[in-house]
Length: 308
Image (cartoon, rainbow, N blue to C red; front, side, top):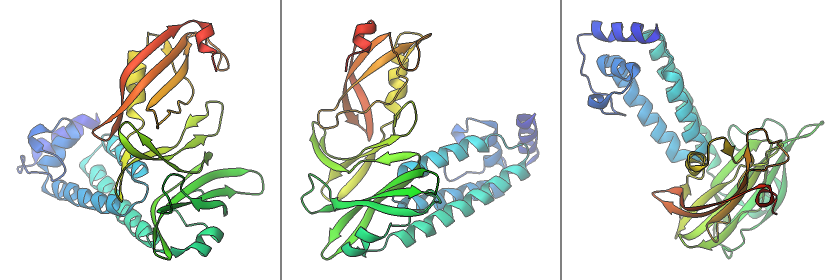
């Protein structure tokens, strides 16, 4: 019904064929994209949204979270029932992105080391509970070029989340270059490692729960340039390569210095505690900003699955 409403609206607009800035209308793949291209106001809104997203991406110190949020919005955009719904969705998203950019611009201020040791950097959209600094030190492997601040967010009942900020030293001041805070996550001290793909900054973290999932991030270092690596999409590739009914049910924590990883494998009917399918050993690489699987070796059986 939604698709019919939007398609009818598109066919009723004489300006069909207008160009939207953030995608090629000649390649419009969905009814919503077709409607955007057919409506001059929506096409302009799409252009403004792309500009607001670019501004927020330039400002943020947590780009992966912003990209994920944008993908969720793009998916939700497809559920618009009418053109008015779609226009409203664009108006709200543009306002959100501009507000996000403004919040991150306020974070991007130099601080002194004494302040960084004492007070949490306020990270936008982090846990709402009070924050304390758990640790401050130089990032191992960076000499004295980088420093970090580990954060804990707590309320009277429990610890609600964690955060990490990486600073670049600028003389006697510290400039934040990476900052993230997430509910139910513990971050470890960041470390710089030399890998087969080059120098990497590893911000490891663990999502609390039975799965102990990897909540960290990874950056390729090129001089002072830090480029975030996609460390999630390779997991979907792994799932496609496993035998039917098999899976890696808990977090996988690669050795980034060697670019290798290993995980026990579960099969249908296994308990969460006790995998029996086997074990996967992987050799990884970095291509086009993504962690990728270069080689996969499987060993079957409960004995392999239970290896430490």
